[in-house]
Length: 239
Image 1 (cartoon, rainbow, N blue to C red):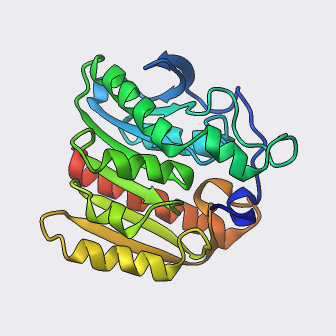
Image 2: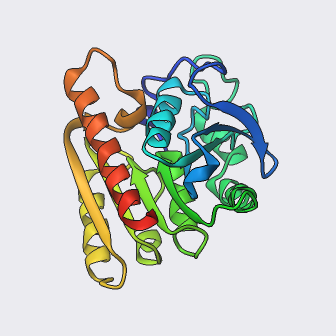
Image 3: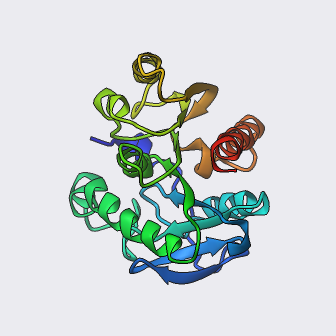
């Protein structure tokens, strides 16, 4: 189960952050950025801190600026984990917010996106969200997947993936340590029918792509590099 590292450096949530807007999609409030004219959508599935995290929304806006319609749903229904104020420890919170429920909700959001005329959809998941995305990648719900510092993803999950997948991990990560990421890489190498890319970013910790410190130059540059890697992956398979 997740430990302190998964809960470290929590963001200050803000419902007003980002240049997009909030609307309901598939029964969930969702932060939306970008134009429907793009005809290519990306679903971003947050970590345990939810869809109001400012750096996640900033990332969504950056992805949208590259020509994608981006949707970030509130999979926690207004109850993201807050290590400072939560009345429940993380293990109990996770029982109420399992990735299995997130997977079912994600399918409804994807249907709502498709109803807008977009059928070419990719998904990226951060920490908790990576488990949701890997479940989507086992089916034909999405065209491509990116996992960023994943939590709870197993080798068996990776072995079942059916769409192109990129795994971007951290060197300092108890949730998905480099040893596990190397096992993901080996499993994907045994699936030549599925294009894959596994990369371990040196000197950064779990959660760095959306929870980096602004003053940490290395983490900021690594987060930008990971974003560019994800954009390259989606550009290859969605456009």
